[in-house]
Amino acid sequence: MAIRGSFLLIIIISIMSVGAFCSPTFAQTFHEVRVRWDAHPTLPSDSLLDPQRFRAASLFAAVERRQASGAIPRQRAIELSANQLLIIAVDRLGRDRQRMLLPDPRILRAEWPDPTGELQGVVLHRANAEFFVPVPDDPAITELRVYHPRWTGHAFDLDLLGTVQL
Amino acid sequence: MQRSRRVIFGLSVWCFVLLVGGLPSVWAAPVTTVLNNGDPANRVDLAILGDGYTAAEMSQYAMQVQQLLQALFAQEPFLEYQGYFNVHRIDVVSAESGATHPELNPPVFKNTALGATYYCAGIPQLICADVSAALTIAAESLSAAQRDLVLVLVNDPTYGGSGGAIAVASTHTAVVELVLHELGHSFGLLADEYGGSPPPMCDAAIEPSEPNVTKDLIKWTSWIDPSTQIPTFTGTPGIPGLYQGAKYCDYSLFRPTYNSKMRSLGVSFEQINREQLVKRIYNLVLPIDQSSPAATAVRLMRGQSQTFAVATPVPRTHALTLAWLLDGQLASTEAVFTLKTLKLPPGSHSLEVFVYDPTPMVRNDPNQLLWAHRVWTVEVVGWLPRY
Image (tube, rainbow over all chains, first blue to last red; front, top):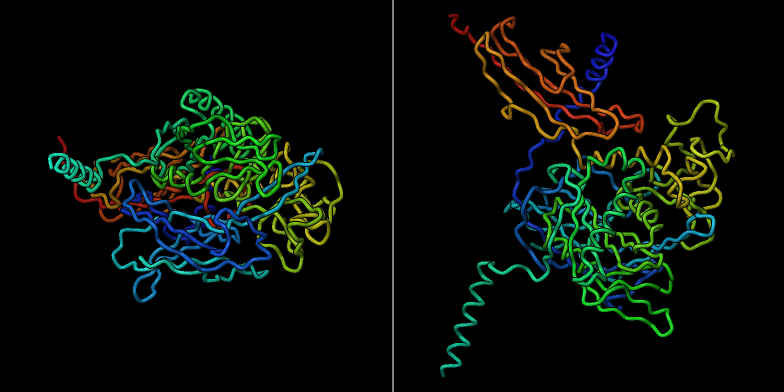
């Protein structure tokens, strides 16, 4: 028991410098913005594309805004991936008010096993997509900035894909 | 004249109803929470929508959702952490049963709520569905916290599915393996571990970002036994090492185990992918559900006792570790701690509780996602009168 207690103390002391963890209460009210992304507006809406051959356009529009119930979804750690979008809600001066990672809604993965069970597949992109962004009820927020995390080999660069005026 | 008045009155009532939001949304569908393990604010919530189920097939749909969940939660780490998930079944009714098969002769077209269609992009097993409609129905039927993950179950026994922002799966029993693999991507942020001819293109020019593939930086060294040869050539399953071939490259990129669910269906995720999935679960679930008292400052008369408690999510076979520290000294490892102030000097004291998941599935947790911490300031004043 003493060994277990000492072990616990060592672990605890080692993380005390981390400071405050996330709060268990998520009482902040919020609304959801439904965003339409016409990534390839000249193509039929149901087109599927090879993402390595087509460059996406930046036509984002808020098509719906509605009050949401419950707690605003939260992520304890921002772990970037090239398969996600980073949405940053900013105020009139461009100051960061809220960050949210969402799966890239364009991605369509087609994967299937060969007779041995080993997979093969392709990754396609939809020509357009919609996604919902939870936004805190913060009157200072005026714009959503949509970024795509691009991996450089040692870090992610954020490519601004477009903005959504609120 | 009378008729136009009635029309105007009817329109007025309709507009009023719309304005006050008195009508249910045309998109909302009935929801049954089939797995309820707690507040969605602190759980991973999976929303399942059916497509190609008629009103008469709703009980069949409910049964097939249960079968899917049994298979999904039969595999680690979802088995151990099933208590960290909620599952909501959305009963979407389609006009016709089944899915569209344009590849058949003659082609079969079905009028379904989400338009599930095989042979999408000319790929036999690829099912496309109307993602916008699925997300809209999910949004109208559930709160944002209740749809961390969205899956469409297609009422068709032919093997097929797809991954991406939402997963799509047919009712073929083997498709659960594909769902798990796609969760590895969308939820776990894991890379494919298979090689093979393009597409997708092999890009071995830079170190990949994902935790389960590498070019020349082994990210899973803590899992590799010192006696394991690097690079590793054994075909024995479950031996972490450095195996050639990953992320669409037969050479130059490496994976952590000989095989895994990110490479093949019908096998385990294996250690490195399981670790990542557990951390992703904890990215949405704090190891403390509730703590009491809610106030962070507590004032007690000397001699008075106060109970402090935390509630935690519960893994299947192990418990989370708790430690209560009073003024930095370990005071208890139980879920409930009663502070007796009789021997405490008057003044301010610190009471902290640390909660930690000691699971052997995780060896690297740089963001300390498996930890949670609460602190109270306890002010001890005066004496309680003695009778």
